Length: 308
Image: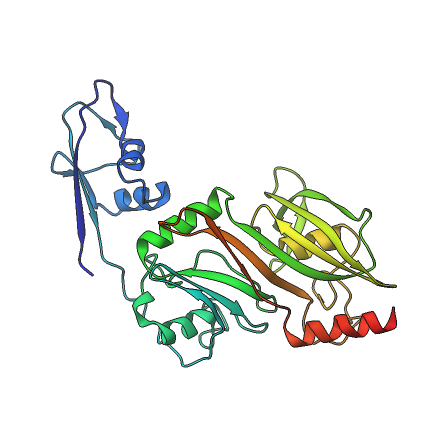
C-alpha cells in the first residue's frame, strides 16, 4: 500500500479548529487518529506543519493531510486452526476458543489470535497502524466466542466507530454460582484498576473509574447455579465478570473474581460470547452471528439438567 494525500481548502468565513475541520472533512478517520497525524507532522497548513490540533484555520487556508501506509508489525503469522464464522473483503468473524490470548502481550509472544489470523491472511498486517492488526475489541483469554477483526483500514475505522457509538450488540452466556438478586436487571458501576492488585480490575467509586453498564436476564435456573444472558452496553475490561461478582453470583470457574475452587470442574470460567449483531461496512442492515457453546460448557449444563 502507498501513502495517501488529501488536500482541502478552508473557505468558511469564521475561524475553526484544525482538528474539528479534519473530522468533518475525513469522516472515515477517528479524531484520535487525526490528532496523532497532526502530532507526527503529517498535516500541513499553507505548506507548514501544523503546530497543534487546536490551531485555528482562517479563510483560504490550504490543508494537506498525509496518511502513511500501514507499518509492518514484525509479527509472524502462525499456522493455527481458526473457526471462521463469517468473512468478506472487510472483516472476519471468528469463534475464539478458550485459552487463546487475542493479541501479543507480556508473556504471550506467540500462539495468539493475531498470530493465527496473520497466518490465515497475511494482508491484515499493519491494519490499524499498531501491533494489534485488525483488532477492534477483545475477549479474555479464557472467554470463548465471537470476535470480529478488520481486514483493511477503512473497515477498521468503521468498526471502531460502531463500538465507540455503542451500536454493536454483544450477548454472552454466563453460568454463575447462586443467583442474582432479581431474575433480570441492569448494573451500572464504575470500573478501574484495583488499587491493591494492579493486574486486577475492581468496582470503584464514581469518578475513580470508567462507566460500566450491563443488562442481564435469567435463562435457566438450577439448585445452586443460574445461567444468565448478559448484554454489556460498555466494553470495560472484565466487565461481566466483575458485574456478576458485584451481584453476589460470581461466574463459575472465575478464580480471580469468584470462588478460589470452581464449583464445577470445567478448567476455565463459564463465559461465552455467543451472539454478535453488527452493521457491516457498506451494508444496509445489521447482521447477526451466533456461536454454540463449546463442548466443555455444554457438558456442564447437561450435567446440571440431569441433577435438577
